[in-house]
Length: 323
Ligand code: UT7
Image (cartoon, rainbow, N blue to C red; front, side, top):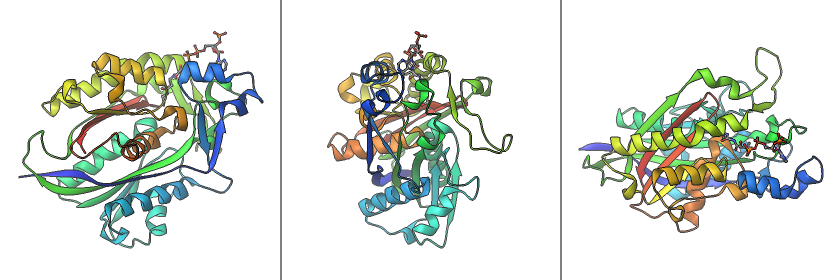
């Protein structure tokens, strides 16, 4: 018997304010046409003043717990993937723990920028497989609107705020690729590329800082590394791209999403795409897409899903799971 980390519940939260491309075009030298054709983004959500990452995360957590039909007291752990914590410390995860009224177990953040949710899911899977926890709430939550340099048209039009969450539960499996739950994971990073995407603030400056990105260079790495990691985790699971029901990719750029699917040989009608409505929500984008994909009726029990993401670090990776 193998213990598998199975998805028991999923949920998401998007802040109320929707910002269409036209709002940027009215303020800086850009256009709806440029943003749409270069990135696929049509609109994004921005958190209200005073609405923090832990608030978004808690809303998504409550939705996932309700979907799972359990309350927070039944959890052993909370892991939040975020690069936009309310404070430098304590972790957003402990803030969510308090907001949910959970007084036992443990909570911590994972910081791997846009690959954060893949890292958090891999960590949660390892904890469940090792018998350290039976039920883990895994959240991706971000308020990237707070890192934007609003005069920089090459970055400010691309990002949005949001949160998504999964309840993972250890359940017995047969140890085959027909099992439900996480089947394989693959993580990578290469710190030589840290200058391609970073925030120019922190303890070295005493400020929060702004996001800086060499978009074209990140793009150059993305498709190759994403297709490669997806292939590797499918191989570890003893599966191939033909077995995939849904690619649920990090939602940064529609051209990266289509290029990666093409390189993997998976048609676009088997890819969950939300980038047009959310923009790039960094670590929140995959759980948001899983929740929206399920709500749309795309993702169904038993479906084989590949998630893949790349971002600052560079850090990238993928997870193969059966829903
Ligand atoms: O999630 C983390 C990982 N991040 C990513 O995956 C992002 C990866 N990169 C990308 O998505 C794309 O590179 C971008 C969407 C950021 C940019 O698309 P691109 O096709 O690589 O455009 P570019 O950066 O080469 O810029 C083309 C032109 C430039 O003008 P010149 O030099 O050709 O005259 C830019 O100055 O577009 C200009 N430009 C804009 N024009 C109108 C840049 N931003 C804008 C803008 N509106 N907002």
